[in-house]
Length: 294
Image (cartoon, rainbow, N blue to C red; front, side, top):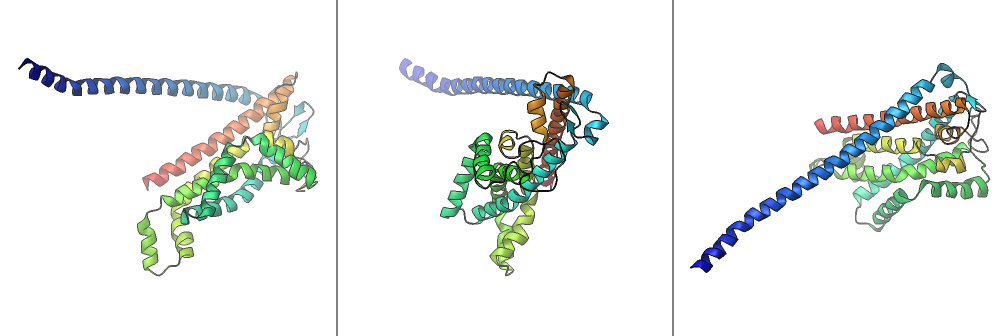
């Protein structure tokens, strides 16, 4: 009789032990998660505060109206070059990225789709300096373009392409199948279903991916050092044989100069890049949340 009671007691005590261990594990997990979030938040706020305080102090009207002159001047040429390079990268990356994402979504099991996904995943993990080296060897030297907007834009497009491709694919996969079935039942062909029904529904998410890819390209330095070079003057409109300035170069080179004027240019450029990236991310979040509410 005592043996049966002991066995029954052990059986009833097991759920209590399981619940206790789960509570302890949950407490430890939430504690570590909160600690990690706190550390990341403190670091992010500290970076933003330092950049914004020093950057705002370095900003003045001449920063936006004059070009870089030695260790001083303004950042008009760098601002223009950043906009030109980013716009060129988007013009090249968006059509190919969206088209690749559409194909991967509509034909998920085809060999080409698996190849596209594999290449996109590989490109995401490739260091940007490797892309810059490829651009230097392939475009600057082999094609003879020299430092130019074309070489820099193509390098940034290569970096942005996998983000746009994968975001487009995931966005199209989230489109309800009922919409597709309804369009097919009305007699629409496959092209019309994809371009006229699915793509407009997925457009907010695709736009978010494009914006995030733009933010990534704006903050790149290494590939542009090998492809775009640097210029203290405004862009002359040529796609090749014409180096161009950009903000990240100003950060990279002027922060190490022993001159206060050069350091101020670096702080101002860091403020502009950080603010631009922050605006892009906030706008992307806004688009996603608005789509979720709808």
